Amino acid sequence: MNYIFQRLVKNDFQWLRPSPGRLGKKRGEGTFVQENGFGYEDWNFNEELIIDNNIYGYLPYTPTEEKRKEKYNIIFGIYNNSKWYLVGIYKDAEYVEKSPTSAYIFERKANDLTLLGSSLGKKLKSKKI
View 1 (cartoon, rainbow, N blue to C red):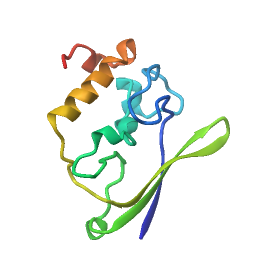
View 2 (cartoon, rainbow, N blue to C red):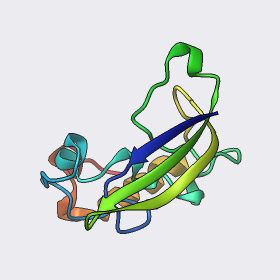
View 3 (cartoon, helix red, strand yellow):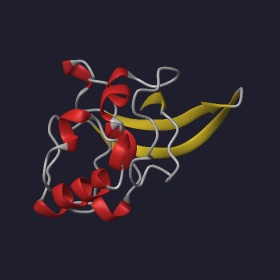
View 4 (tube, one colour):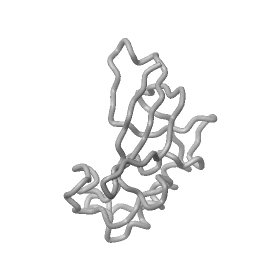
């Protein structure tokens, strides 16, 4: 079994949808979040986005070829107010090159992004659902 610890950026909605107010922040946020106002991991624990009894979360890790068939326990945490906090755990996770999706998921995430309003990056702000 492989174990991974992944630090997440703070999320006010328990990683069910993106939090507003992160656009342009420099401290503690990755470049993608700074430019777009959300992170790919912002939906990591949203059970309404399950496909075929699986939740497809985001982790910026690509295992080597020989480790791609192995299982992983992934521990997610945040560092806030000089302390580490456990956010959630994926048990027996598998690497997937490209996760399946559906029109429902695209619509749901697009709607979540429109809720960011002025906290959404320029590239996506002009897009329609």
